[in-house]
Image 1: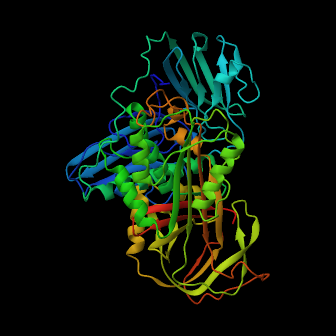
Image 2 (image 1 turned 90 degrees about the vertical axis):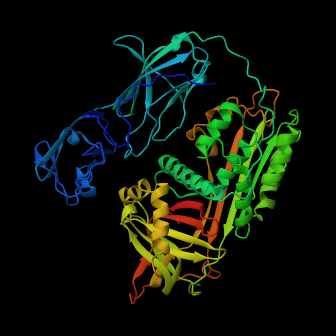
Image 3 (image 1 turned 180 degrees about the horizontal axis):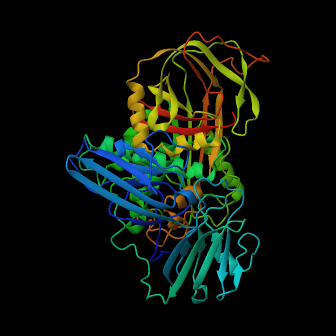
Length: 600
C-alpha cells in the first residue's frame, strides 16, 4: 500500500543552509552554517564568526562546540546540545566591503509532524533517538484521547487484533518509526513518542480521509521483458555501476551501524546489490522505480543487468557469489524473466517443494554448494504459504601478498568497554605496506595487498572509545571512501611493523530490515513484479544475506604463547582495538566487503 502523507518537518539532521536565518533543531543533530549563500570572488576576505557575541576560535574545539571550517566559509556544530542555542554571526571584510550574516538557533526538545493518510492505507509515524544515543530499549508510543489523557500503545506484548496493525518498524534502532496498517477513521489524532526515561522525541498529528475509489492493480503494458541494452560496449556503463555500488555500500553501512552500534559487522554490498538488481529484472511501475532508487541506478540505465554480469565475471577469481529466487509452484513465472535471470545472473528461478522440511534442506544444500561449504545454513524453515524468497550468499578467501610470520603468537585486543581479550595474531616486523593518516576520516589507514588484485583497508580510530569509532563511521561517505583509496594508492609503501588480530567472521545481516530501510517496504506488502508474474501482486516473504570472510595465514591459529612483546624498529600499525575494514577489488573498482571488528 502507498502512503500519501504531508509532513511538516522542523529539521533535517545533516544539511547545508542557503537563506534560512531562524532555525529550530533537535539535540544530537549536526548543523553546518554557511557564511554566504552565493558564490563569491572575495577569496582573500577576512572572515570571523561570533556565537552570542563571543569570537569563535579557529583552533580545535571540544565536541559540541562551534568549529570554523574551510577558512571561515562555514561553521559546524556537532552534536547540537542545549548550549548550542543562540545567535551565530558571520562577518566578512575585504577592502571597503563588509558583509554580515546572522542565524538564530533554537534547540527544540522534539519534532512535530502532521500526516494525512487515506483510510485503508498504511501510515508511518516518524520518531528518532538523537544520533549519539545508545539504544537500550524501544521508545514508548502514546495516543492522546483528549487534551489531558493519553493511552499507551502496547506494541510488544498486546496481541489483540487492533494492535497487530501497529508495530515499530525497526525495533532497538535509532529509528523508532511506528507503522499503522489498514488505517481507519478512529486512528486519527495526536501520537506522542518518548524515551523510556520520559523524554519527548516527537509528536505526530494524524489526519485520516476517506479513500478515493481504488483502481484494481493491473499489469497491463508491464509484462514485456526488460529493455535491451542498446550499447553493450559503452564506456560509461561500468563507471556508472561502480559509483552506484559504492554509494549503495555506504548507505547500507550507515543503516547497519545504526542498528548495531557496537557489535561485529560484515556484509557484502556488491552481493546485496546483485540480489536486488536480480529482483529489479522483474519489477515494473512504482516498484521498479523504488528498487532503482534503493540501489542508486538511473531509471534509464537499461544496461545495469549486463554490467552486473560483466562485474561478476571480473570478480570470479576471488569472490564466490550466488543469488537465487525460490517461488511458489502455483506461480507461473514469465518465460522472459526466467530466460534473462539465467542470462544475466546464472540463476534459473527454482520452484519450492511440497514440505517445509524439503525446502529448508534444498535451500541450505544450495548455499553450501555455492560457497564451497563455507556457509552451510541460511534458513531455519520455509512456511507453506511462501510466495517468493530472495537468497544471497557470498564468500571470499584471500592470500596476503606479503606473508606473515609463521610463529604462533598471542596478544591482547582492547574492546570498546576497555576489557582485554586474548587473540591470535598476525605479526610482521618489516611488512611492506602503505600507511597514512586520513584527515577526512580521522583515522590511521593501512592498505594490505591481497591475491586476485584485491586490497584490504583497515581504518583505525584514534582510540578504543565508542565516540572515536562512531566519528570514523559517520565520515565514511562514498566520496570520502573513494578519496581515501586514491590517497592510499598514491602513498608509497614502506616497511612497517604490523600487528593484526586474526580475522574470521561469519555474520548474517537482517535483510528484511535493510530492505525496509532502503524504502522497499512495499516488497513485503504487495509489489509490482509484472515482469516476473503478471497475474497478481507479488509478496516477498523472505530475504537473506550471509557473509563469510577469513583472512588468515596457515599455522597462525595453532599453538599458544602467553604474551609477546615487539621492538619498535620501524613505524607501527597495531590493530589491537576496534577498527573498520574495507575489502576492495582493485580490478573492478568496487567494495566487496565492509566490516567492523570490535570483538575478534
